[in-house]
Every structure is written in C-alpha cells, then in structure tokens.
Length: 71
Image 1: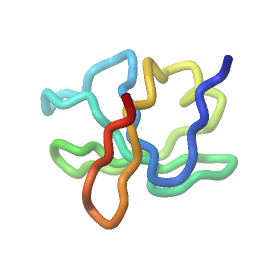
Image 2: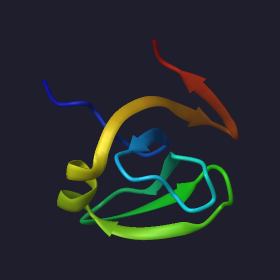
Image 3: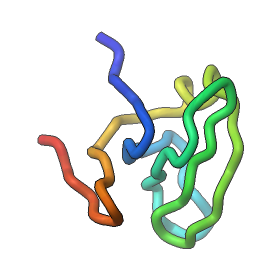
Image 4: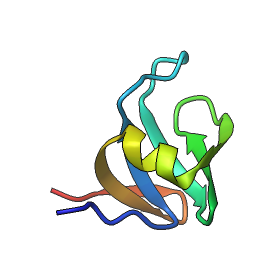
C-alpha cells in the first residue's frame, strides 16, 4: 500500500538533513516537488520519483503553520 502524499504533508526522509532535523513539509507538489526543512527552513527542489524513493514515512500534515500528527 502506497502512502498518500499531498501538498502540506510532513515527511520523514531516509537521509537526515545537516541541521539535525529529518522532517520536511511539501510546499509545492507537481512534476518537481519543493520541500521545506522544518528545522532550518531550507527549501529544496526534488523530482517526484526521487522524492517517493527517499520517503521513510508520512507523519502528518500542516494546517496554517501547525503540524497534525497522524497515528
């Protein structure tokens, strides 16, 4: 079963970010996806197939700056 990812989803990727936080928010979702580090705010552009391979799990989604964690 494939995890559903959409605009605003919070992801944990397989590789950690140098700032020490491993949670990312999807800020643009299309052929290329723009993800934002929730630790330092760095924005990275990544193509969709590479992103899907790098996802460890989907933890929740953001709504107006807050993070909702799905259990």
